[in-house]
Length: 265
Image (cartoon, rainbow, N blue to C red; front, side, top):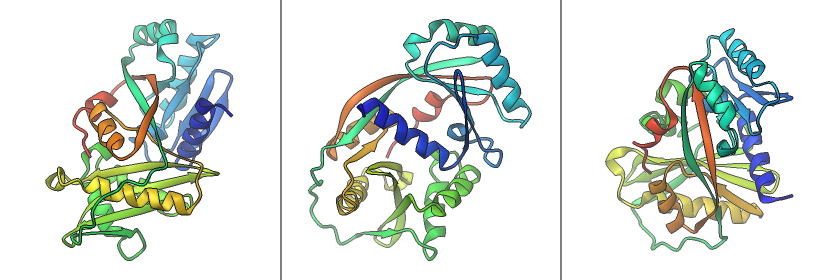
């Protein structure tokens, strides 16, 4: 299986862990009526020019409209979908494109000196609400209402393992490992604002790398959301192997770039 196919397989497995999926002749529909404001859970996924683009737009608009969810498209290989993008704009969709780097761990454990002020715990029923409090304060995650439902869903899914980092006893960073077959993906990596700049992400990523080693994963991926975050992961032994041009078309609400521009780990 080629790398792009592996990346897509893992991506779709991740999406289906918190949303429903329907395959269509032109792509796929993802939805979760319980989390209508969660973009990844509610979008149409297209990677090739549709044969009947007007019908696709009508179908997607009607499908999400019946659930009172904002219609949106995620477009892979956006540079090859110029005609479809032009039609979406004519139909009133706002559009943005951005580079999506994909990074792969080089299997070398990050070497950091021990720090007695740093403690990393697996998230269990005992510290669940501490982890939720941290993630609810990360505006890039969509706020408490979005993250509360998402975290509960992930916590009940055995493919996810969440981690909570405490600095001097204060919960301040999180990360999780999603496992599908022999592949893993690092998700939900963040630190609350007042503790950023202390290199805490390195400690929690080192812990995830050790967990991946223990699980004998063949590959460990991460999808950084902007260049600054990409640089952080690069310093933690994740190498950029592919950069995809992704498009996002949406009828209302904030753009993904608007959210990402304020993001930092």
